[in-house]
Length: 120
Image (cartoon, rainbow, N blue to C red):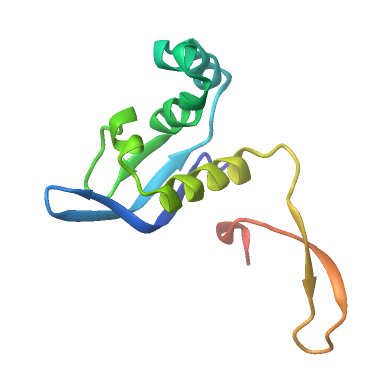
């Protein structure tokens, strides 16, 4: 079972003159969710929940291996939105289905998204 997933941020996190774009996110656990909900910053402001949660499940970002809420807060909005969508996708209990169009015949169809690593 795959528990870690590589990603690449659209813009990247800038620290000490370096741009960090490649990273790894692991699957979330019940403890991650409970701990994030118990975080003092989250109790003070519910909007902080995604930041606290992502800081727990992003295990590396470029050469950074200690991901803190401050790092997640320092992301560009497009990168934060990307990570939130990525989190939702890898932690979804049901496969994600999307509408698509066949590039050859133009017929509309519904297809299941699978992680690239699951492709033959």
